[in-house]
Image 1 (cartoon, rainbow, N blue to C red):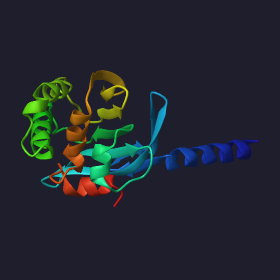
Image 2 (image 1 turned 45 degrees about the vertical axis):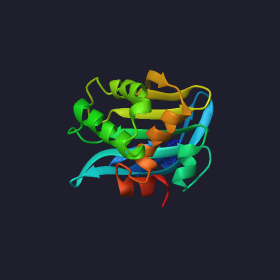
Image 3 (image 1 turned 90 degrees about the vertical axis):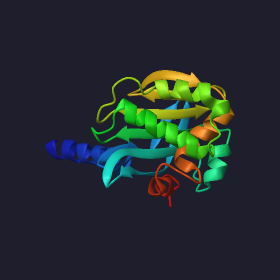
Image 4 (image 1 turned 180 degrees about the vertical axis):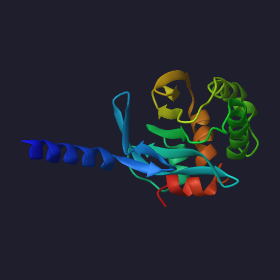
Length: 186
């Protein structure tokens, strides 16, 4: 009987391990469900700065794609998961990075989105700690829904905002070229 239990536990553990992808020293799930919509990991990588890992990032889509422009412009469910792996990330640094990201993804034309960008930045006001997890989820019927550690922080409507937001990681001037390639599964 002990052997049967051991084999059962081993098989269950193997199933759990294969349902995740290790990146940046953390495990990202291979699929996520938001509001009944299952999204699958398209690709994942690490955001680095000066050889320091800052966060593991994963892009989740309904079907695999390596076309960044198509993903940014798609009016379909998708999400980006950010798992903080460095205690060097602070709220101020995250807001600065978000500002820079929107500048780059909109080619400096942030004025039409200023109120939405400010609302998004406010989601990072609370202290950020290592192992915090942010889920940035786009649902066409709602807009961008942001979660921190599974707690909903708020919603920002508009396809224009979604495109600029996902452009932080997928535009021609992404936050990190290697992370972009990894998210696109390349």
